[in-house]
Image 1: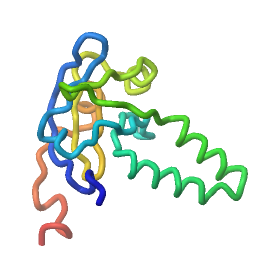
Image 2: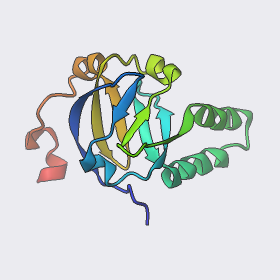
Image 3: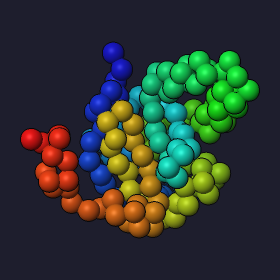
Length: 144
């Protein structure tokens, strides 16, 4: 069974440690294997997937590889990903090219998105209104 399937919920703000290290909070870490995939999301954030889930994404991308455009899309997916490992304290170092891609400074927001975690720069996260409170009226089809 996929350890990360639909388990990541909520949001928390964190500061990066020296050397661009991020501590994954225990509430998220319990669903995360020591080895995972860090991905440059098209939305401008960084995503954390368990290896099994990301391998399924790669498999789906390869199904599109029957055309030149499909092969290029599959390449984009694999080039934007990197295998990572948590240390014993639940930390990992975000590579510099990923820091640049996500416009990440000292503070980040770590958001649970069901099957993945997302790492957002503080500036981008707050600028997109993501810190707004949700009300049932925003999504009546989900709550009523």
